Length: 138
Image (tube, rainbow, N blue to C red; front, top):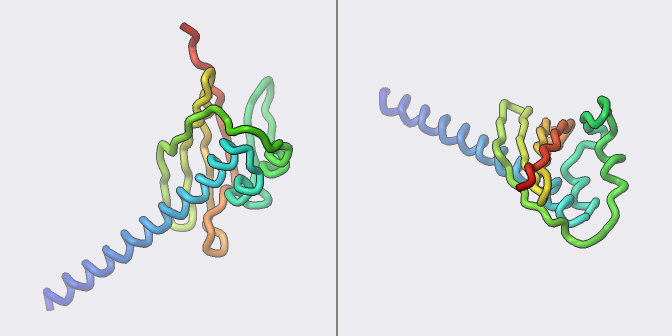
């Protein structure tokens, strides 16, 4: 009996871990669409990352809130951006997740915080907030 319990526990844990890894990979893919689309000035790729009602909230001189796809829809095709991107972390709890991204340009870095939901089996960014960190000149 103890052996059966141990086996069942192992199978449950393996299934749970694989599901988490699978979701992690799917979230990496979703935020990858955002990062790759922005780097390559490719709106069609970028929009795959977002839910159609996704919001983007930020502060310039004042607080602003816009539809993310409408904001990025102004993107013009052009040469590849001179920037480096990385995913700092991804947190997943059930069908909700968040990710911290860094997009480094020569003179500044965007720190993006993305909230994602698993909608109809697909991870989509539903909101984005960000901070623009200027690099100190030497």
